[in-house]
Length: 73
Image (tube, rainbow, N blue to C red; front, side):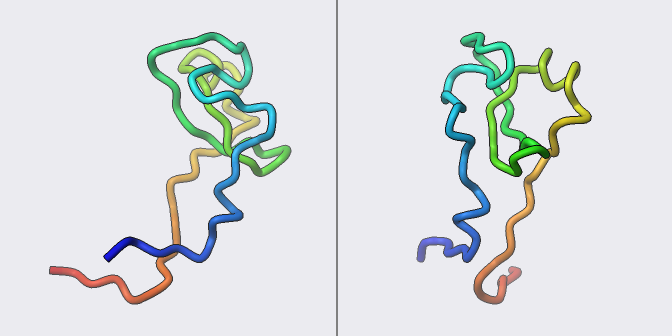
């Protein structure tokens, strides 16, 4: 059964974000992390250097509510 979430609109990327490139410096790097830009509350890809230099402007957002009851085994 596929996982269902009720928050798809909360996981939209910034219109200027380009997968494979850092949102801030636009470099094509092997390692990009996804953060939420506080100003727009949209997701962006950031390289390690840019997140370190601009941490006050971004949030690490890795939470997601479940639509139905989560079962534990």
